Image 1 (cartoon, rainbow, N blue to C red):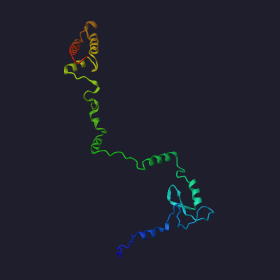
Image 2 (cartoon, one colour; image 1 turned 120 degrees about the horizontal axis):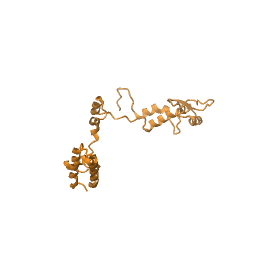
Image 3 (cartoon, one colour; image 1 turned 180 degrees about the vertical axis):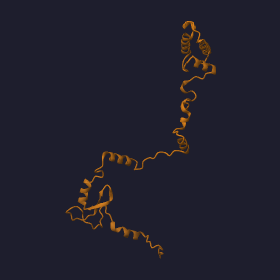
Image 4 (cartoon, helix red, strand yellow; image 1 turned 60 degrees about the vertical axis):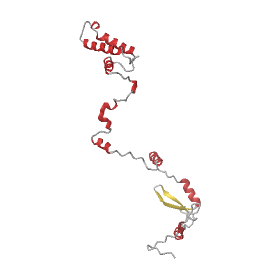
Length: 208
């Protein structure tokens, strides 16, 4: 014999079915136990079919007979009175089930930089942040210090051949040589640097 529940609840399946029998719904969607009358003007049929009154009150219903609920549903428009912008906004919300993606929360480090007025930690380095492309980037040559300095003096590019560097050397000689400047020797020191630089490059095995 089942013991009585101290809280007075009857949790038997049979009891639960009895409680829900009042609103029994048929396969057609009709509330078969409804005692309402169809709300369509002049109709005296049983109002067993419910239809929402407006998009803003979907839990508030009209009750119609089968024919009039069909007629109502054909005319009913959920987006009636909605502007183009509001319709597009609703479509965008529906794409993500009205759960828009939230931005990632900043880490403690990012918040610390933000307090200093810095959005990106790489800004601290300024232009130097992008000055180190890594080994071999851009096809640059590995040159000993003397040849590297020589290339800088001649204002030559890493990918140049020896002939191209020689061409740059000759152009500088023409600009700096006293004979090309009416005997002016003010660029003589610079000229000596250029000659030294070419001496480093012309015997180098690092250039074709």
